[in-house]
Length: 308
Ligand SMILES: Nc1ncnc2c1ncn2[C@@H]1O[C@H](COP(=O)(O)OP(=O)(O)O)[C@@H](O)[C@H]1O
Ligand SMILES: CC(=O)N[C@@H](CCC(=O)OP(=O)(O)O)C(=O)O
Image (cartoon, rainbow, N blue to C red):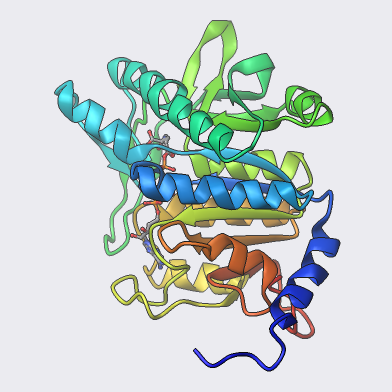
């Protein structure tokens, strides 16, 4: 790579964003694909540590779908999903507790700790952080299908309320909350709730500046089979068009719904970035060009620097 005429240009440019985002809340959702590989999990933790070092206030929400699939497999429990969400029987919920508020959660906390982040683990059940009610059977139409089917998701919770007091309490003492996607219901019930949905609800409740989804792919793709088809900037209406054209499949469907919820709920922007490519999160935050996809409510008047 040729030497830049000004070796400090990148630093100067990044400093602009460091100043702009100081004390701002960034919700970072770590997807299961990133977490199940110890190397990418560590890289994600190191990037979060850098945000923290620059006085950005991260709140971490994590998934764990692939690890939960693996445990279900080992326990001979069926893996059934509809529109990207898991159908959750009582034994599958027990497995979800073991993975999402157990092994994977603890390993993530240890990696964050090692990276210098004072991380404290919670699930949506702690201190009534996320209250949900059991999802009633709903009609689901998969992309490419013309006829919908009724799906009973079992012990899946639809979020009714978010009480951020425990999160604020931890943040006021400079801890970084790390939230597992379980929610609490009436009479001690525990529900499985999609982590994207949890991340969006938390981001909206905290009036976050930005919500990041760290995923396996480099961003939102025009064509899911072509990793070079990343859309750099999208609006809610672009997202709706992609969805109507059947271009959002699997786990991208709850994510699209979550992005919409966050943006309508007042989050400044939502970003879809690679959790596999090292430093993609930092590039999205601290450079003009970014690395993945920024989703906003509507087109800004001009895009210069908006991806920072
Ligand atoms: N248009 C699209 N752009 C990007 N990814 C898409 C798209 N449609 C479907 N996907 C799939 O969605 C996945 C991300 O959702 P998901 O697997 O739930 O992520 P995670 O659990 O890691 O958060 C991508 O890895 C990709 O396979
Ligand atoms: C209801 C529902 O779908 N719950 C998810 C919770 C974990 C999750 O969302 O993990 P990812 O972010 O890795 O997909 C599940 O059981 O897989």
